[in-house]
Length: 484
Image (cartoon, rainbow, N blue to C red; front, side, top):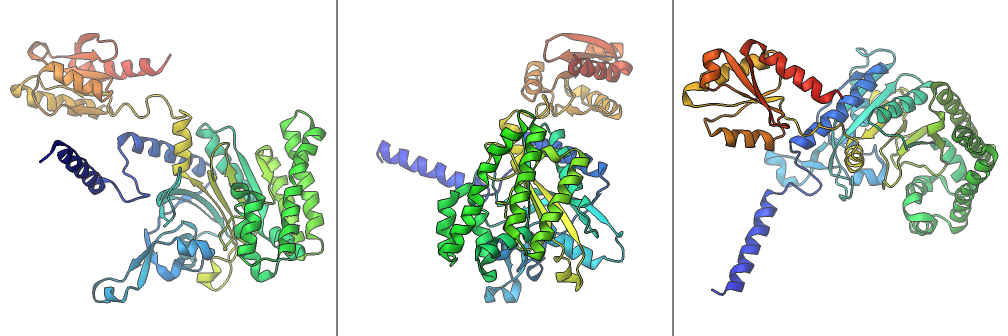
């Protein structure tokens, strides 16, 4: 066998081995450092949501397929992961179950199921994974977490303002400062479409195309209009309206000067003025403009108007939205950090009567991507699996080390126990590699004196203390390490 052939064979084996051990495309394994990041972000978001009076909810990963189909529009239906019938029905090739596509439709089902057990205004948050048969990309996966917050039972625009404030507070608590909440209204969009000459049956097609305006540009949208059967004259009028809006920002900047809050207010007012003209006598569209004005007024009272921008090009593809729609954008990120809107008719699909509802979802994965690239996580978050590691001096001292480990854990410390009697150098090297800041040692001399030796892995200093005071000594050393 030639050397070159052996190299090819070895390379092939490595590729085959890699294929066997990699997770499915668009899915990921989460090592300890990754899990700590996720738990940190989830913890911050939960704390903010609970400050706003939202309660937790969880639903199954699998739903009946009829629960999900027809709720997300044309493109959404194609991205649902279907589960084939099992057992004797497997040969039919039919699906009766599906993986959860989002958290909103399951919420609507829950409200319909437990309507008599829920409060008049049901405010819930839900942080669970969802699955979509999408094409993986940067910050886009087939399995990912959503962090939803929803209010059901009220048609007041106060709800939208509260959701904007809650999502903004969550992002600020995570360290985000440069983000914008984009705001639009589906009924305003419908009025603009109709007045531009787009046939009602083509509205969904036009919205799907418009939702890509910031990604593929006017020429790309115009091409997609043609592919979707929208008349050329209507498409040109529609794009003319949206592209003309770009000149408003420059005018608002001149009018407001350097004040960013005044600039945002001037721009939003200018856009609202254009929308009033565009919707004309369209009753639902005019009502939508009024609702946008109300949301902005309430957002101003909540202190988040300066982060909120009315964006008539925002469409959001999901077909269940009925009113205001929202999306959060940050610079240099393809896509958004989250989105949502009002969906007053969705619960009625299960209940037989409509219940007003509005919600917002933060994308956990994209948040983590941006925070990791921007080094926004707290120092030490992912590098300290334990506060202290207890060594084992020799086989005769295993019981003593186990007892010390239990004592230290009883005082609230995170304690790792080296599982074997080994050379101290190897045990220290292991603790250092794992980023454990302190090591506790009970050698023969320490055991005889009722003491514990504590080694600082950063400085290398080692000193002995009474065993009864070891926990407090380690806790104080940890406090000094994090306090300047």
